[in-house]
Image 1: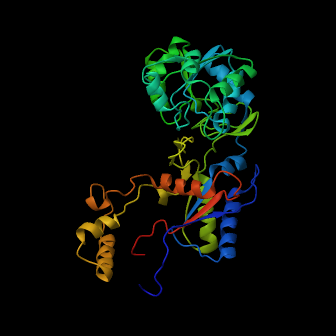
Image 2 (image 1 turned 180 degrees about the vertical axis):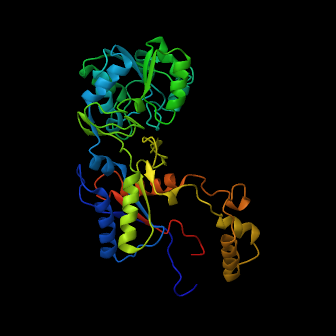
Image 3 (image 1 turned 60 degrees about the horizontal axis):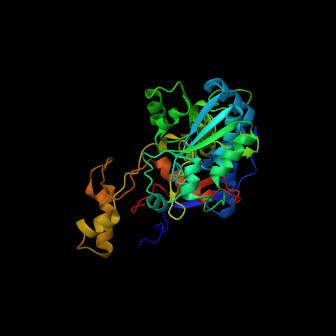
Length: 398
């Protein structure tokens, strides 16, 4: 190995920042925080380093908040304010409960239709084993609340200890609406109860809306259609309530609005300060699954709502172990290293279909880097809402 050869690959660092408030100059804070961290920790910025900014501080700097009364007003205007079917919500006090409070205030009665055995992101109401034992077919069977309780009792979430069925029902009643709870996985089942429907799924919402409209629903909205224009406060023209989080018991922080100017501003500030061309992105939930809890980190509508152009596309990588075990199986040591390095240098810009690239991850760069950033920053009290990643675009030859 060469004396000055780099001995590490990708490095992901959480960057501590001040607490962000509405109106703060976020681009300046992010750039300064990265530069101060580099000086403090003794690392240098390089071309193609990545700065990731969590969506929550972007929305906070924008002041993109909305009240339950704003939600109620928009729901009432778009879905009539009488009996509304609320279908396929995720089970989350942080992600959905405050939204549900506003939805309930905008209706006289809610038909709450929960998917089962789990919600869209994997929060489990009941195990598949229990469904098998009960002889229930989740693809076709519609269960009333009474039948659900008779078969499965009062289960609580493994991690939160909450019975979400009870919790959502009580919350709706507290907001002054009647509630009827059913369990089904076919969107059309809600039309036996009401023809005004708010579908709350995230990544399957376009299909659900299409199915409901084709089946004769009178009014169909998704969460992305609620607060997609301002009432008295925040909004998101692309995603509405999707990607929102609880702020207080009566307000939600919405997904940030147009973020492209922010990432370009940060990129330019770093270029002016260091002469280095970095890439910048805003990230929300990553895209990974917890094997124990079976929960997908997928509650945001997209992993990255904005990024600089160098983050467009997917990785274009060769699988080193494939080359070592196949093309160069008779080589070892420096000969093997040289042969693999030459293969990497000679690789084409598009390796789709190449056997030597099989097993590499065919995902968007922003999804991959967003997952790395989400895991690095955590979701609690680390105080590192900015993540600085070096060496992500390196390969064996760098």
